[in-house]
Image 1 (tube, rainbow, N blue to C red):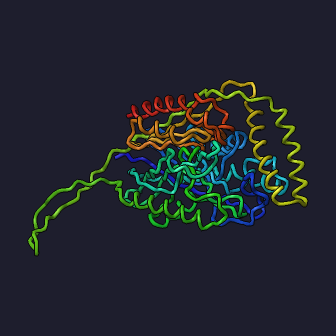
Image 2: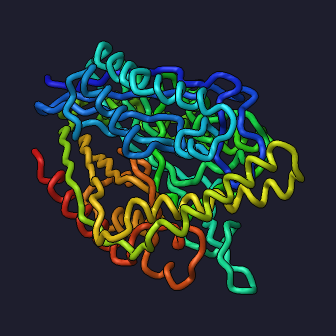
Image 3: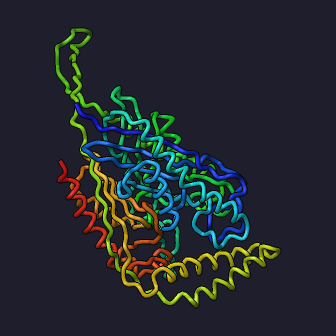
Length: 464
């Protein structure tokens, strides 16, 4: 019988001590003192139904278009995989190395660029390794529940929307798990999908960490065996129930809670179904029914890939000149204060520089444009659909898609295949707040993503 094939690879991408870390506006120190837990690039390659696809999970906050292109070029060049069949996803840890705000660095820029320069081939190597370890596998999927997340858009009495704990806001606490076993039913790989910003570890500490996703993967591998990948969900408005701390024990605890739930879910499903048969009754102190559980080899799951670019409407962005001028002044002030100034003044100026830099970058990219090409990618693995876009979609987008999906298990993600940009739902725009202010998109973008994703899901469901 034909089986799905799978291979696993992993590269250690932990940066050296001294490499710039984080990228918080409130952070005054730039260099990391070392890693609390290792950072990895993990790759799962699947082959079947005449198709081949790679799913890559990287412990990083994300990469701009230039570095994403370099990484995808390296993977395709080393492995021969088609670009549109490579799913390149980031966990979005905010306490990893600084990979996206390099121009603001005044210390360690050489180390940051050296780290970035090595990454494409390190990540490609993990995918190449996965292709050397392909074996026949079976799959099973299931769901659990974990409450380490909360809606983070908190409205204050004065009307401002800030990042906090909005216990009445939209949230999805579903833990989605795909278990992949070898033909002896030994765990080979596990995919865990969950929606929560990895902003547990913040500006107060100088340790590089993978935040809770790294700890979660560690726990699953310890409890279940095999190799674990994490796919971030739609977390544009979702954060940890306890975050923005310098206490590394907090992210370790949250990751352990999620990891134990994911491991429990995975342990509770079987990739080789069995048919129960009553074969007799054994007299004892009671009459005991005797059963045979007969294994039934399932059909190989269909593997299919779809990828296309959507034209999403943009907000109107002003000319970048005014923001660039303000940013230049702020950079000068940051350098002056870092040379010897009041720490709290430095923190305030750094925060302002970070905010202006984000808006200036959006203005540079989008001034004068009406639409932006945004990749939508879907991978079907039997009854499971993995759907991904770049950027940071709000959780309501995911809930609409999953509620109308033809698949039993739909894992919708952001943070995939490069690119930054929040994608709020239309209702959020009148409220304002950080995500709305720096989103490149108009309020219509979310609805287009929902509609086009459902079209793609129906196409994938039709594959036989």
